[in-house]
Length: 311
Length: 311
Image 1: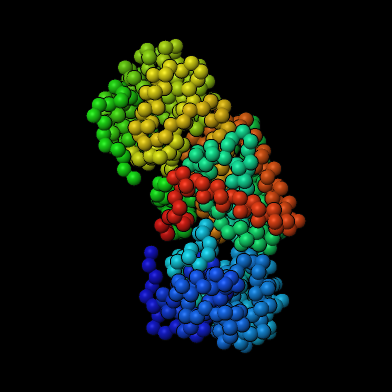
Image 2: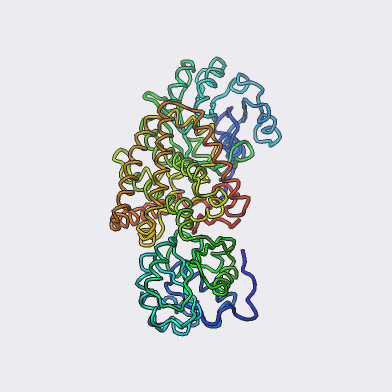
């Protein structure tokens, strides 16, 4: 997978990325590789991450303060955990130039839109966003320029969003290789509850349950994990702060979808108890078709076992 | 990953593999590549699979009947769904030679041991086995010779098992690249309930729940599956017959582990409802360590996102 060649002239004059983790550092790498911004500014609250960002040489300027980072920026993208959005917005708010576009990459959109609106001044364009992409690794070293290629980025423009601002943000994501879709914050939060948040919670949970069984040792769980369990450990290795914030900030949708999941699971358990093989067989056949569709639209590899290398 | 070179002389005179799916055909390929058997015999209940096995040229002889398959065999390995073990044992029982070793590769061991014992004659060595290896694909074309490399194969010899027979079976698996461990059928069925059976059930279940949500379309679930959901679709694409039989034949252990899982999940749901961020953060941190251990012992790749290629 390769990026398209650099643009002849940048899409954005000054682009500031706040929060240099997996997503922020991937945006920097993609934007730099394709020359999407005249000046690419990075800022992170951690001094160590700022130093590492400088050493990696993935930004034109590593700002020393939030104020410096956003000064004169045409677009600012917040790549911090969902629970930190309000505090960051408060820090940058007074320093934004009029007409600046402010977006984010959080996995929850309703709570983030409220947090940004509460702290950002009139006269800036607030358009939340969410690239549905990532790996289980975190930090500025984990990013890569092709992370967003052929992945979807969902934008949730509030009613009355300026068309030109939306086009500029959408253009940035498209130039980084993503497919852009727009929807309401409420719909986003429900869709992601099922395609991302509840799957993560279930993965964290089964890994926890396995670790706590008295009759089976942790060493056995680890040895025989190739039976299926190890698949779950990948997403259960995702960043704890990010995911704590996701669940705390998308409570209603997560609890609604979890209720469905548990209801369905208890029905399956009952089918097992009463040896209703046909019910199990029907479900197991239906779920195969869904994977085929995901492969067909290019969101998954067809290679057996994800094509993974043996350890 | 490559196999060791072929042996100078075979380990087993005549080896019969019954059931030529992913596992059976992988055993044939590995045994042939390393010359582990003097004569490698294959049989499958499906005429089409027998023809395909012949065309693939992965056995010395494709038998036309179960009787022909096991005649004069020193070792017979049943690679059929767990629910079919009894019927297959009944068919081959009268045709086994005295002193033959009969094993299997089923994912459940208690029920299989009972089924084999009920239908096999005195004078043959019954030693159930389970290679903890596989992919989400099925059938004779899906197998490959290195499937068992660096995976564990669990043998569950009943009390009083002949040492030489156990050594021969263990030698076969070792020669196919596996690490061999022995344990009781009861312990196997509990360990696999947590490392394999319940993870599969949860995966099937979340894919089913997602497909049934009214407010989110199936097309949205598929598009945004890279948020975590698609990981679950891999094991939810596994063979429906095999997995129906697993659940019907390991009911007690599956229901016990499911009970723990659900209890833990409801506690997590409560933590979300009451915004107990510390509880979430603690679990999410603990689960990271388990993945690291699985990677360290070589049962998982450290490559981000399983190293999977983009679609």
